[in-house]
Length: 97
Image (tube, rainbow, N blue to C red; front, side):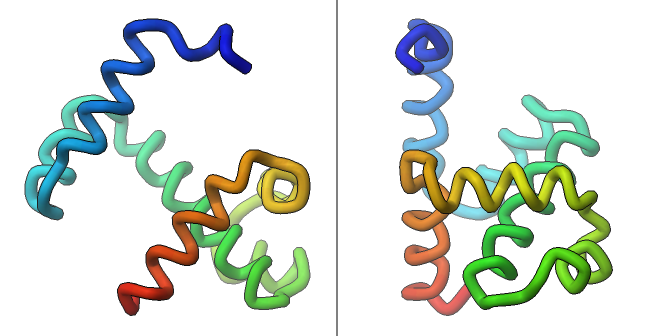
């Protein structure tokens, strides 16, 4: 996985860590991502949340509009990934999001 973490990727990750409020986050992500990319990322996060809440693929697909392939990929990351979804979901839960 280290091959994906070039200086450019590290700079992007550091920039995201430096975003201090929702307004600045919106400004940055609207500039750096297309609307479709933002929708896809937010959809995947919602899928992860619904999987953690015990919903099945059909319920999640109906709720989010995600394909079963996307749901399966997110589920695989939840089970065998690096823990990123779990960390973010825990943060959101602790902050009542």
